[in-house]
Amino acid sequence: MTLTRPTSEVTDARGRRLRHGTVRAVAVLVLAVLALAIPLLGPSAALHGTGEAAAPGTGGVALLRGVLFAALCVPLGELFVGRWARSVPGAPPAAPRSWAPYAAAAGFLAALGLASVVATGNLVPHSLSEIDVGGLYASRDGKVALLEVNAFLIAGLCARSGRPAVQVWPLSAVVVAEALRAHPTTEHSPLVGSGLTVVHLTCAALWAGGLLHVLRTLRQWGPGEPGAALLGLYARVAAVLLAAISATGVWSSLRRMPPGTILEQLTDTAYGRTLLAKVLLVTVVAALALWARIRLRRAPDPLAACAPARVEVVALGLVVVVSGLLTALPLPIRW
Figure 1 (tube, rainbow, N blue to C red):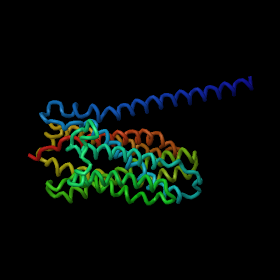
Figure 2 (figure 1 turned 90 degrees about the vertical axis):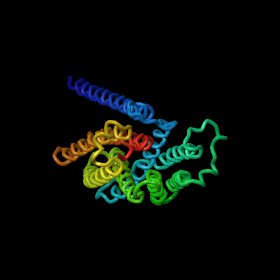
Figure 3 (figure 1 turned 180 degrees about the vertical axis):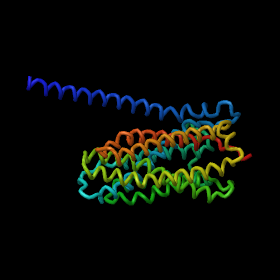
Figure 4 (figure 1 turned 30 degrees about the horizontal axis):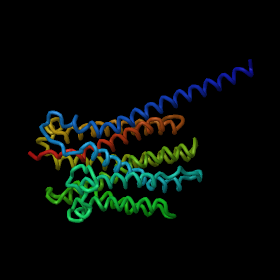
């Protein structure tokens, strides 16, 4: 009996871990499929009943821009958290394998796809002959698209070099390019809008990418005080990032939807509906972050905060996808 019981207990424990692992894998797979479906199905659902017309290929553009945003989050999060990890007292020397080269490759392909759309007059190209590469140099949008393509290419080369930290410069160029693209010169106070987008996009990338790299680092380190210290350090900075994201997001929304019309446009325009969905998702993410912070402070094992943090990073992935959809929809009319 003394030999059989421990063996059965170990078997039961392994079975529970396998079941839990299977459930988590299925949940992640479902969320991944949902994330891919949002930009493809989102335009038709968001535009239904609004009387607005979507540009050709809106679903594809939304998907490409979501990939571009994700490719921006991953390396910035690695650079952001990597410096902290090295400064944590007693931190193990082991570090997770960098995903920056793969993110740069995905960003390069997404930027290339978006540039091909710009090169055909914001239409979906059906053949290479329709793409006017030289025409990209003749327009502001074309130059911005080329800047993003080249920036991701350089970022990938930097990630493979002996000094991966220098990739922060081409990645910063992508952030600036996105800010300029989102606020054309015909817009009212485009520099103010571009500045808000730079802060908003930078803080969002650091929040999402940083949390992903923290969780990957904790998985590499295993249980212990260094992991709890790293998670606590991230939690403090994440609160500041959330405040900056909220402030710039509200300000940007009020610039595009004046206070007197915002309630109407949140329900009657595709942009407003998608923005409302994004706000609800961010609210869920903020609640998960608060839950993780409470568990970090009060739970006997501070690393119990990893459970809500894992759900938070998946929800942040959905926010990134919805953000890609938001940029592909027609802007609301300033009534």
